[in-house]
Length: 248
Ligand SMILES: NC(=O)C1=CN([C@@H]2O[C@H](COP(=O)(O)OP(=O)(O)OC[C@H]3O[C@@H](n4cnc5c(N)ncnc54)[C@H](OP(=O)(O)O)[C@@H]3O)[C@@H](O)[C@H]2O)C=CC1
Ligand SMILES: O=C(O)C1=N[C@H](C(=O)O)C[C@H](O)C1
Image (cartoon, rainbow, N blue to C red; front, side, top):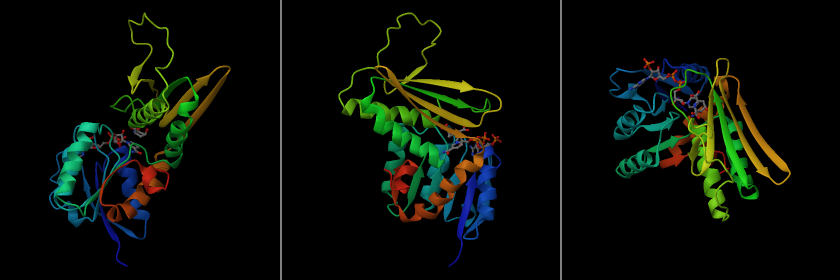
């Protein structure tokens, strides 16, 4: 069988460079294109699948370029709001054979952490998310934290839970963090870190802590490569790697 041709957008970035190396190392994949800011994406080097790790403001246009050319896309870039996803879904309606996966995190442990948090949410009165990343990250909260909070918030609503208890009335500096789907989210940026997250769930007399650590970007590669191998067989838009792993 011939190798799947793969192009990478954001190829010189931290994730893009790691993906290029992983694709180069895989016998069943062939790296046919590397693109960065200012490059003409053109015919994408004849790629069957594009992997997109760029910046939130550029990602929708990059993905649209691929979809219009009938190329499947694995998207790791953050910033895919419901509105952006809806626009992409509409676009995919014109090319029903094309598959796009948008996944906020490709590390298996992070995917499991999100699933466990969603499962635990209905049992706990309190929940907060703390995400910790390297200080070169441009977006906050992280895509993973936003997705976790969305899943947890929706599970709480479905279970009929009210707002998280919080007596704070005076917080002039925003010390209580952001609220995503009613869940407080706190972002730490610290030299030495890669990508880490804790979900803290509290009930009377107890606390459950779910923690995941990516110590190296290699942690994302098995998920990215699994997605590259499957995306062509999964037409339409999929959000979250869990659906490719039988967890969704
Ligand atoms: N889903 C997941 O598992 C993961 C997701 N991420 C996400 O992936 C994204 C990238 O992260 P990271 O690699 O650390 O970031 P980097 O800043 O290291 O890389 C981004 C790359 O994209 C390039 N770029 C900027 N604008 C464009 C454009 N218009 N078209 C094409 N390329 C462009 C940048 O080039 P230049 O520097 O010249 O501007 C740079 O090479 C972030 O949104 C991050 O949150 C990160 C890790 C894991
Ligand atoms: O920018 C990063 O580094 C990461 N971004 C993704 C996110 O925002 O969730 C995934 C992971 O946390 C690393």
